[in-house]
Amino acid sequence: MRILVIGGTGKTGSAAVTALRSRGVGAVVGARSPDRAGGKGGVALDVRDPASVEAAAAGFEAVYLLTPLGPDESEVGVDAVRALRRVGVGKIVYLAIQNLVPMRAIPHFETKIPVAAEVLADGRSVVLGANFFMDNDAMLLGAIVRAGVYPLPVGNVGVWSIAAADIGEAAANALTRRDWDGQNVPLCGPERHTGASLAANWAAVTGRPVVYGGDDVEPFLTATGLPAGWVRDDLGQMFRVTQALGCVATPAEVAASAAIIGRPPTRHIDFAAALLERSKA
Image (cartoon, rainbow, N blue to C red; front, side, top):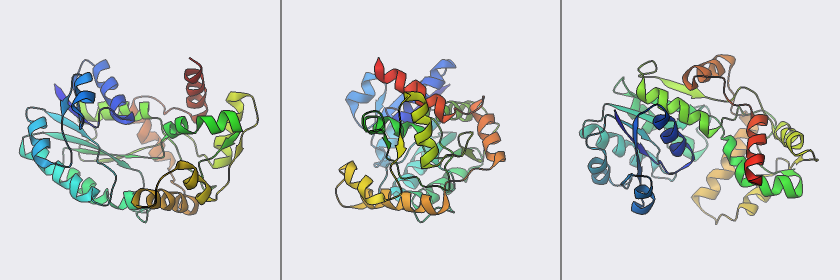
């Protein structure tokens, strides 16, 4: 079985490639940069160009699809799905976000809704709805370790963060098995976390005080260095909506996540400990 992983040089794409290859599946990386794709034995493609997608995907049985953030994500994603089907791809596994519709006031949630609907239209493909990424903590490690602050303003309602490695395992299972065909499957961690509880986990693994930086979104946006524009506005809106609604997972959704991952989802405290250990290597 040959599977194309579009976005296979990113966090979840790389995790999907690793999980597929561990199963003996011929996973091929698809990426925009020929050098990055070639370095992993992959193919070059531009997901924004349907002709490029068709040329790269011809001959593959299944595809893992990521779509690029931006105001045109809906159009780009729907066009990519249709291009994949034109060349005979039998199954698409699309990485979306949990609670897309309830949280659609976030621009990059809204833009994924038409793509997810297009993916599910064939009855064979799968949408994976991921909660917050634990792996975002890697970008915060300096603030956590040096300043003793957990700066991600996720609020107090709660998120059920998931590790990229778990997403990779879920994607590999969805691509190679039929158990989840035609479904939108939630992907979430096992526990509710707030800004304060995430900070407490980091305090536990570092052995030093770590406090939550608070709910004010603007200082965090300033610290990112992002210029004014769609991406910065989208990020700010994501945190404001998350502070109001959370990104909530039910016990049934946690169980569904464990089923498609093939084991219990990673706990944040275990992820944090492993990340800290890798940072010392």
